[in-house]
Length: 293
Ligand SMILES: Nc1ncnc2c1ncn2[C@@H]1O[C@H](COP(=O)(O)OP(=O)(O)OP(=O)(O)O)[C@@H](O)[C@H]1O
Image (cartoon, rainbow, N blue to C red; front, side):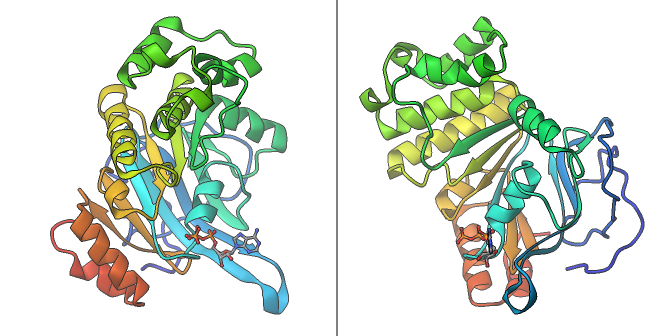
């Protein structure tokens, strides 16, 4: 893993996105929002996040450089405490890094004030959580359009119909969450996340409360949303089966990148996770054949 700063990277280059584990770091000074065209929906450079002070200080992220290509589905995996949630929260503008930078949809979000971050999360990011987070008194459709209504925007009806048809929700739109299965509730949450056409959908253990069949169904739908709608998805998961639905798995260990898997399978993910949890972070990247960079 690289640990030293080097020359700046070109965020606009379509070829700049692949060399994650070996890429040089480029420190970008926090500053006002700048907009560029990018082949990456999200990029982080030299990202650090520490909590606490003195002896009690925890370095959750210790210099992460990573790019997430537009229209791809990426899973973030690693042992407990490796920094997965912290990374996702920093990428989504839910947490403020200690240093380093995050570009989201061409906007440098590090340095944005709270109002701008709230607007960015509302307009350009979708979230799917383990606990679905649906409003129990609203119907499925009302839950799906809620973020737009809160932003005083009208939903695009044709897009709403397309998404709900793709997710198999057309005949469930007037049901309330308690009248839906867990898998159906999560599909409602996915529809809600997709409706705003966000730059990125972030998933935080989206299958954590689902049984095997519902989990496979939701992963299949997320995968389709990248294939058929060009949606970028970044998902934190502990589940090798869920991760195998992604195009790529980014591995974290102890707050740094420990490699990645392209075209992951359940076996390759399990092997890499086993290597990481036995402390062989470098071995994980070297040992999984045919896809680890
Ligand atoms: N708000 C916080 N205050 C103090 N320490 C924190 C805070 N959030 C996270 N940490 C610490 O940072 C480290 C990384 O935590 P994080 O939740 O990102 O890991 P994770 O890989 O998502 O873990 P898990 O798989 O168990 O959810 C851990 O040591 C954790 O205890």
